[in-house]
Image (cartoon, rainbow, N blue to C red; front, side):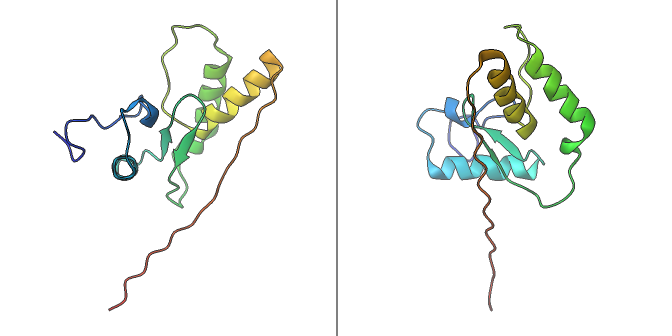
Length: 120
């Protein structure tokens, strides 16, 4: 049993959209748990994700990782293993759909900073 009761917390290969009736508390708990494990990307269905930026250089943005996701998106086999959520996956998928299927694509990035202060 975890802090969400009997519902499983998604791991890197799962997404929030697959949970039955996710609540605000559940989503925030999942994001905090993943952030504490340095998993800054969380998938929400096939074409959306949340990123909790640690405001530091991160190895997940390396050229090697970029190539891994580019190769992944070029692979059209139905039996490929799903990779962890990543902005490179979202961008690569949008590019491949645009190129292969001749479908327009849009990626919306919303940047928000929340700073919490404690006054005594």
